[in-house]
Length: 487
Image 1 (cartoon, rainbow, N blue to C red):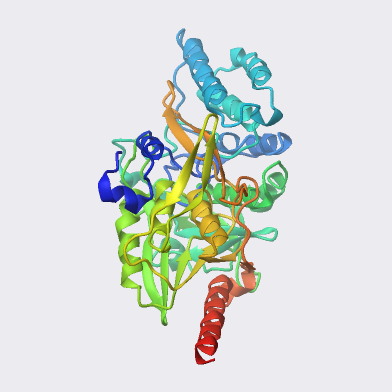
Image 2 (cartoon, rainbow, N blue to C red):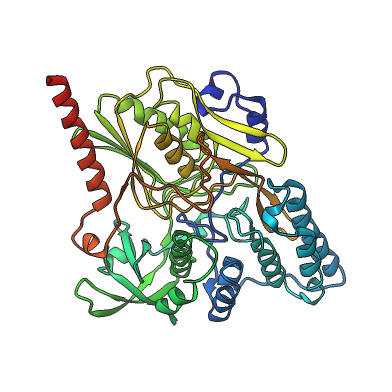
């Protein structure tokens, strides 16, 4: 994709290097491996297995979804060409990291020795799933986000029908030591079955949720990312092919044990366009007024939403404050963060710098005509990642936005997607990111100015304490302005 003329200013992509990076499909990608994303990829015939998850826990959490989700799709038939296919796939993955990893010291990891160790295990691999598990374990040695192997069928592939993507209509979060329903889609089977926010999931099919929580409570990742992995594993087990059923056991509002069967239904609505190897994703966009305050929520940074976001900001230009709800937003296209920021800043600035093996790229912000000058609040949670973190951290550090909610995922590495010889997708980071003041988001996350935790009690009461806190802070600041104006 090449961005020309004035459009380059809108997306905040001005330097030749940045334009080339966009053309090569640099993606501020999704934060966790296979299917652990809030928007639903293809989940046909996937489940989490007790053996695989146990192995992941023993490995310190480095073996992510390739081990956590056991695909029951048919494996390619082994023949005399398979060993060479696996060898070529292995060497591509290892060499891409060797050539492009942003830190030439690999954070103290001897990548040559890692390659030798895992290459020695390649000869005993007899299945594609075994190959992907081996590769994911090797990538886990780096202890960084955005290094993932996505087996064929993980996402909606070119030519696939979106009719095959099914959901029961739930979203969940790990709150304390429980997996709690946070939203129920209106009109979904889950809503018709009487499920409500605040209910606690206990079992999905024959899989105990508590056991999964214990198995994934260890590892090198930040706690927010580990909680997110659990939530995504639960969603992957709930979702699947439309028309199929899943039995769910849960606690209701009075902690009574209930059980119901839910039918997976086709995911209706809008999907993003494919961008190179970046697959289509379901898109959600909402704009409204909460009294006088403007509210904008979108679930992913994709180019197709850029014009709508800009139009929403202009539509709400008379509002004294704007709330950007980025809770659950896993990121997307990096240039969009600077482009949206340009609608909120009245002078040229920067959200930060991408540091690569050689050189760096500045994520420049160019102010747009008539930028919004009111109060800006950004809502985040543990499922806010990548581009969404860059946007929140950059505006927070510039003093342009107040950040409310929970510490974000801490996964902010610019990355590329590449198709492997087996048909799998390989995502690998090519740069680190730091804010203008030198703060690294990777592994740290964005720390809110006002920390507010979502609770089960609030969900049962139909309340959103994070949004309430944002509105309260806006009201306080507006009151101070009125006093200053009167004084």
